[in-house]
Image (spheres, rainbow, N blue to C red):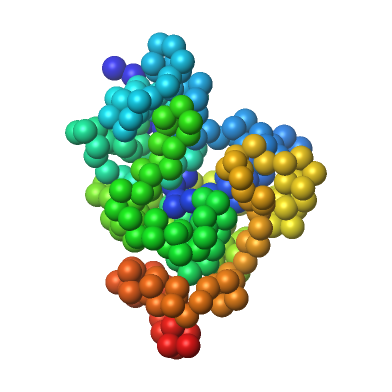
Length: 288
């Protein structure tokens, strides 16, 4: 039987830095001048919602009628994705590492490892709201919803679930070789974070000048400019800008005390584990 343990998942909750991570890896790992722009990242990596792979797995155009049909075809589509390239390759996902209808959404038999990118929920909420074309209160409500799903018009889904469960499942998945990256740390020290990821996780010897060029090429300003000049194919319908702010700490201006309080109440144990530096400030902010 063919060994398909080739997929290194690029996993995150939406709007946590997945596109930036894919771009950084592409600009470092691909030959000079060959790294794709934001609209051609599929030249370097792919995603688990690709319509063409679902069509192939379905034996014809896939138009799912519900979650169960998506799960039935997803396993076949993922095996096709795993076999589409030799050796290890990257696949974007927003799904949790759970079973649905007795099927693994992240199948161990095709999984070589995972890079998990997380972002604090206070900054995530307003960005997720723009992504969902929703107000911030609705976005927070969805971040707290166990059955939270996103889907395409053809019935291909992302099983997001709750923000805290998403983190717990990916960071605690047994037997999974993983590298955890906080978006905030990547913002502060992109070269240092990428050096650790490349050397310690991917066993790639880092060339400092090459890494510096990759960081510069994928700066938020450069990605914003690409979106302004060319658009962004992955931008959800109705969303004005995919690359809107890309900063840490925007919650101080974007959220109300009540909204900060809701997020704290919903996710406090996860905040204590992954974002202890935000506990005091958000507690004071929530009091108004």
